[in-house]
Image 1 (cartoon, rainbow, N blue to C red):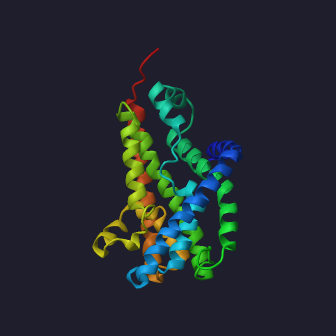
Image 2: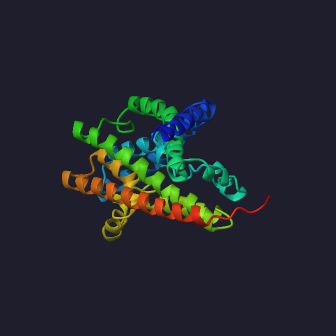
Image 3: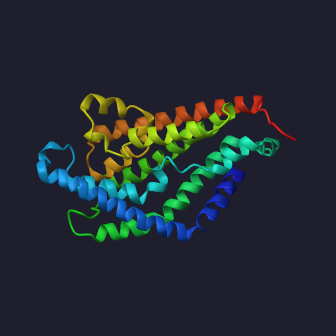
Length: 267
C-alpha cells in the first residue's frame, strides 16, 4: 500500500505545479458557467413551473460542476498511460513488483484531485459572493453537506475506475482514439454534464440513474442542491458503492488477463 501512496503523492505534487494552466481554466470555467446560467435563466423566465428543479438549485448545480470539473471531467485522461501501452514501455512496468492497475488507479486519482484543488477554491469563493439567484448557495442541510463530500469521493473513484477500463481496452486495440471519444461523449451526456438528469423524461431518467454514469457527478451535485430526498439519497449512495465494486472488479480481471497476453512490438 505504501508504494501506491507514493505514486499518489508524486503525481499529486506534479499536478500542483501547473498553476498557470489552472488559472486559465478558472477564467474559462467562470465564463462557461455564466453562459449556462443565463441560458437556463431564459427558459425559467418563460415557464419556471415546467422544470423539475428550482432555478437556484440549477445555478448551484452548475457552479459545483465547474468547480469540480477536474474531478468529473471524462476528458481528463493521462496520455502517458496510452503512450506506454502503444510504444511498449508498459513492459518496464510489468517488470516491477507492483500491480499496474493499482499504480495507474492511484496516479489517476492524484491527477484529478490536484487539478480540482487548484480550481475549486477560487470558483467556489467567487460564486458564493454573487447575488441571488446567480450565486452558489449553501447545502440544503448539514446532512446534505456531509453526504455531498461522501458522494463526491465515491463519484471520483467511480469515474477513475471507469477510466481504467478505457486504458485497459488499449491493450486490445491498435489505437485508443475511438474508445476515448466514445467514452467522453457517453459520460458527458449520461452523467448529467450536459443536461441535469432530472430534466430527462421520467422513464429515461429512471434508466439513466441506474447506470454507472449517474454515480459519477449526478449524485453529489443533486444531493448538495437538495433535489434528492432521504430515500433517494440512500439508494443513490448504494448504487455508487455497487458500481465502484463492479468496475474495479472487472478492471482488475481484464488487466490481469491483458498482462498475461500482452504483446510488445519493436526492438
